[in-house]
Image (cartoon, rainbow, N blue to C red; front, side, top):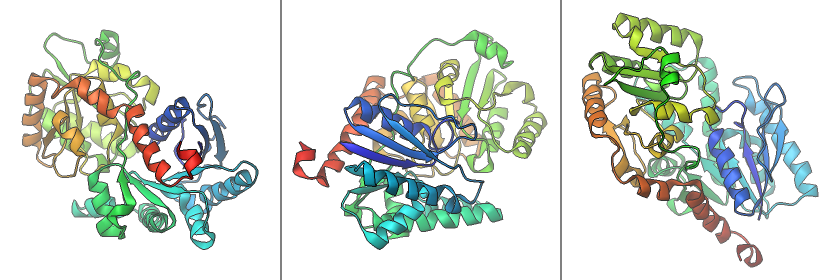
Length: 390
């Protein structure tokens, strides 16, 4: 099967959606498919190769104006490519597809097109406004573009992929997509890269966290910004014994990180918190090995890849109780009200004492990328001619 993938976030850097579509592509190539990826270019011109796949780049946008740069460039490059190298399936992710969606609505197409909603922009906006977030002008514009793209993508696509039942409900209620046009395709995890392994004392020492006997190391991995609710995690850590220490593996706005450091010092936990900075996806495993507990305190997520990585690494993992989670993950995850520091701290103490929740082998079987991509292949097949389905 010849598949074209549209995705803005492609490594480097390994941020945003980048690891997921990268792993999808790698797995689909291993399954025997032919992949061509159209993605945003790193300023250096570098792009992470996938052996057996072709990765074609378009200009990377200045923040907030992807609509006028990468999105039209992707459409032009794809149309040129498709005229010479026809594909069997088009798989678009997020709002880099904006102009392609509009072109598809105007002119149609015989090749099946699948639009992939990792979150809905309308759902994320609703959740953020509910907690009092004040959008900047660029954020408002970007979110408006994202909502339009979701609406156009939902109309233009032959079928919609979403990451969990909660995102499906948002697509139905907020965008008006009929439920029978949506299939939940969970995120997966690279079970060869993320697996249980011993702690590396040298990493903890380098981060200034010891190690000391009896310490409990907590990990957060991901972007550091207001939407991720990191302040609540600091408040919870301050309520726990001094042996609880925290690694924040991620980068974000300099002003926000300064505020977090000041807040940690104000809570008296400055020496118990290590800011590791940006950690590239392939370099994350030692951080999971080093921790005893993973916490993702954000109040809205789709199906976060870092949660799957922590579970594959055999770590007890906590998320906020206020958003929907894929039912298949429920047996493996602890939930806490991450707006309540005391409740989060109590959950952290219980999870750290108990260890991994559920059957680890069962998790790996359900959430390996190969298992997920087999399901996606089944959906592709419904829209393909008989000879390609075989």
